[in-house]
Image (cartoon, rainbow, N blue to C red; front, side, top):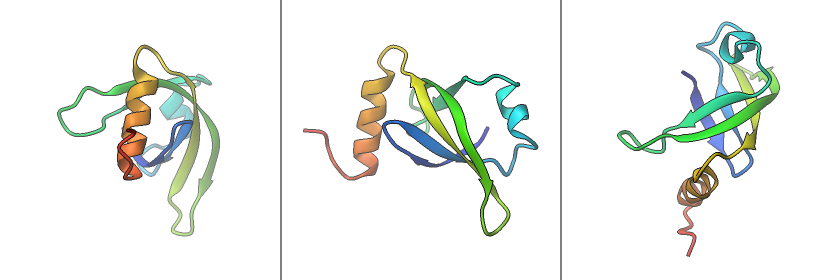
Length: 92
């Protein structure tokens, strides 16, 4: 499990400090199923994403940018609602 650093309608940034290598996270696959849990107890938003870049920050923590490439079922709508809530918009 990785912690999300930021999320948008098209991708997310994650903290890789708890993962030895990106291959350990992806299992060697280019596209990976990602589950975003909006709030504790809520149903995860299931997406498919691929890593675009990985880089250490000033403190040596590895971060990675991922692009969403599939939005199964109602994932796109739920993700958009989450992003709007994070940005302080209600989507109305």
